[in-house]
Length: 246
Image (tube, rainbow, N blue to C red):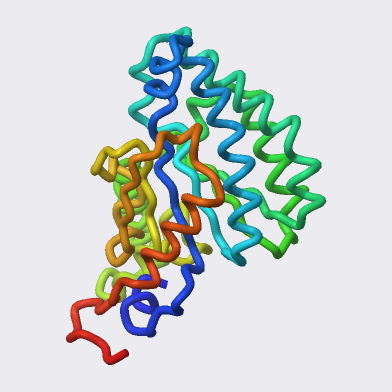
């Protein structure tokens, strides 16, 4: 998929949108509320964004939900985030399935609570054949962590004789990533005005277009998604080549 993204002219509309959802804490602080209320408001933004992505005929939507670095946050906040994740998986699964949305989760599940892993497994199994939109939640995810794990698993495959070392290329390496069955993102959006990628989809976003928006995540809506897509369509994606003719 990596090579395909580089060599094949991209469609004018993004097939895969990935979002770094940022600003929940600042949204709550601006209103004199605890950070947990910002995270709860962020859940509503997730619902709006999934609906808007479906309406825009986006095929894949990946949301940076909990990074591997987020464990450094206070225990009370982590507990609230895990509670919200439980609530979301439990309350939204039936709706997502009814809307023909496939649910996937990428990241290291070993550190997640066992009951959440069970809910993830159930969500993935139930929605596996859905076709309208693939919703990927990045949970306990880090780009460097993913690349390191892929390199380790590839090295072990070479040791076992399953892969020849001189056959390793970008496509072979990518087949060991969490996103092996997902096209690379065309568009990466970050909210809250910050201009960092924060260890998100480092390999996959090599040729993505980035749009940084000042809106805080709980205020993100279909309007902002449309604005980001319109900005994407104005970009000239060259993949290292000369400018295309329009």
